[in-house]
Length: 459
Image (cartoon, rainbow, N blue to C red; front, side, top):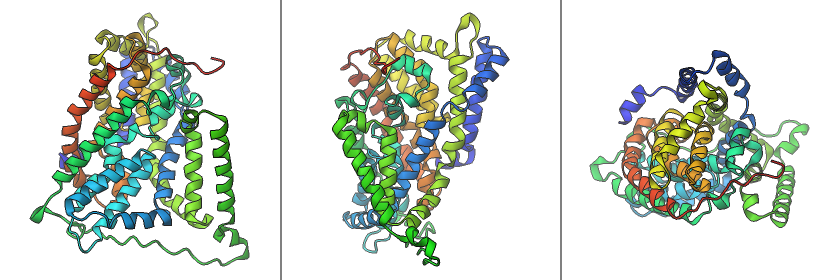
């Protein structure tokens, strides 16, 4: 499966381009005029500019924090905890998923560096492929159930929601999505399942392939900064400004918690990114070291920057290009899902649809903006709780990551491996996760009641 994926899967950008074409053809099929399709494409192309930057910053801030000296020291200490090869693999999986609850970008880099630190141990022989796959489990299993969930963050931030979607869903803070007991229970079950699978699937004996066997250099010593050569550079090498910026950020954060509801503060994507960015600055110590880390992090954001405008264009065509009877593609899809009815059947079909679409659109936030208008309208029509509908999406959203290697790219750069080295292990996780996910969204969905959308003031 891994070899087939690497050979036949094109770059994720091709999927995004193909998605625009497919949706444009579908709009023609329902009777939309070429002009309305072209207008929707061009007018909607930059609708997600703010959200695009926010998602790029999730990756960048996670990378910067994970590569800071204090976190690097913590990783080296954690690497000494596992006593056996199998516990080392399951330990990496558990740590990766735990960190992912805070930030999926941080989880990728943290997990990769932890895997490398364990692989450097002379007293332990561990399969490096299994360690790498375990490091991916934060993103491959539970990332969308954490605080950096693109869909949950988007639904909690009125300014980032397209107007058409805001009218359907209103504002859904984390109290209705991430922090429901049903979501937290799902998180705990999936973390336990993933850890057990990682433990028992770790190769033993002669089946082990170490980093040395794979030709991977494990030297992670940071490069030394060039010494200060001009008087004008002294602030670049000083901790004064980072400390002052940290104090300002801490003061702002305290003020937010004193003046606003807790869930409103933690649901704020802009506030979340501010804290992580300044935390990275403080942890690196000086502006010069911080900017060096940022430079290394920027390439990992390239896919987001060039793909999200295409997702915005898709969403615009779906919701604005009208065909026969004045209906959009979004309206037709909403009718289809509404016909399924409420309850378990709706939850299971939405979860399966989300997983399949994720193979073509490997982006949690971008895909939500494509999928949400008709899925959330259908949920309203069948009286499915809107917060749980977001979580159905979030639970199922991770499944295609276990097959499609797009989001492995930052981790692979850290591990210095190829996708085919990991996908054999992640596909095994997928085979176990799929039935469990479908069962959970069905059973737990029956514990919710429908709550009408809450519109922001002035809407």
